[in-house]
Image 1: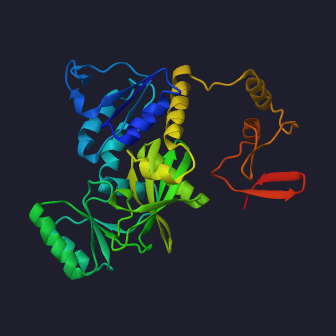
Image 2 (image 1 turned 180 degrees about the vertical axis):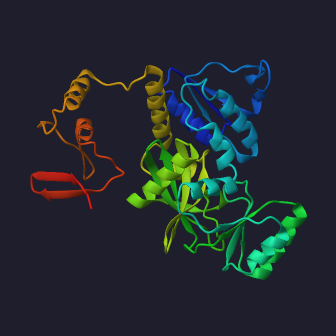
Length: 360
């Protein structure tokens, strides 16, 4: 199968492309700046002046500055390429913080209180009603760029005057005190494959790694995992970085990134993040192209037994250990239909383990 990454050629993109070569028969790195979109009769996506080759999988990613081009490429390719991890609509939504917050609101995903006003004068009236400090954001921007803080109505008013002079739209959001830290969760498909807690440098409120933040690996709670997964699903992204604040009132999503950098995360987690992304894209592409997942003959026979209702059967098998953790065979998950998005009661004693779905 053939795959391609359309990107600006970042280090993260190169890592993923290199990892994809272990799975796909052919992988091309396509420079976004050399892509041309033509609309109308005979239109399409061109690369270096020629129609884009046919691929089984295309991963489109890039900076918010190219949001319109990215959205055009993804929307024109949708339906023509068997698998694309990012929906065309996601490039319009995620590269605009206002649209992102609207989608989060529609899907009941927790986020800080966010305000939008029609004019600078209306915004100044709003400033009289909010609690300080507050955050003011440009709708477009990543890596902490375009984010400003105001600790009083006077400083907020000054920022409003400057924004008004620049004729820039903006969002007002409540500031959540977390000691300068947040969580970056990387969603790949239906899993959070890695996560880190980012801590801002002294005198800096932005915890983004590109803004000098320091990251450390973190094990997420089930609640945080579900929020990250729900956010990515709502935005139409199989690969998505989700930024979450741990507030006194619970976790709050502040941003999402469909072109997440992997350098900071890769330095603090024990897994190969790029390989997790490549492996997932290969499996999804294979599923679409072949119409089914690969299974060895033993698994096929066991699937038939499950479908025929032969459950409750006894399985003799070895157990694999990863550190101090027990890994059960895949067939166990298929029979029990256990999900990492549910809760279970576990009864243990020496030589015996019982797991049962928890029902309130």
